Length: 313
Image (tube, rainbow, N blue to C red; front, top):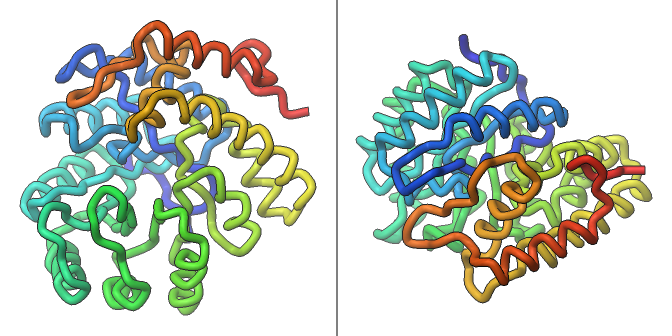
């Protein structure tokens, strides 16, 4: 059964890590533990196969298994959003059909990467894609990975189709995000979601609907509390919780020398916290070795954690 999808979708929708036991082996038991952990933490939806979920490193077979098992475990309790980003329109549609077949609520798509499209070409790609999608669509701005930035006017053009119901921005560019919100103010049903957790509280205070925050894999209660405080315009509480979020960001995500540090750190922390069994990272990456793993453990030890949960008071 498809989960109810509120309009606009609001709150904390974690981008799930994909628990792996090998390059093409999904750890279903860990996935179940992760989903139950997130639901118990009060999150408002589940987003699978995004950047944090390593979609582009996974086989189509495994992506389909991830969709099937997530929906089975979730059992209609929360909206499930499935990322279908691909260089091929046909493969995006194929994945969207699998998402619909197993009861997902919506799909999410970043711009096709490799060929850098112009804005008119980008709009045409989505106009073609929308004709074949069985589910509502969230646009996903990830310029660091796909080389293309959605112009606000392009978002407005694509969203003339009412099947386009929201926008996730991972650029961390707040003036840009505010411009998109202003451009889309004629669509009160259009969900505006921030990716980077470091600026989600600020953006919710300024009118965003929520965040797709990777740290919620570890500590869902923290990010839900931050969202609730921002929604209530409790600036002092947002500031207080922001200090914990920044401590996470500047330690767990910053160990290692490369762009993969966030993903490796997050998965390593999730394994140390017992949320997932193994922090295996799909090729081309490898999980942290013992020296980095010890640094993640030290970073976790400095956080106010009791029985695996952040103490919020």
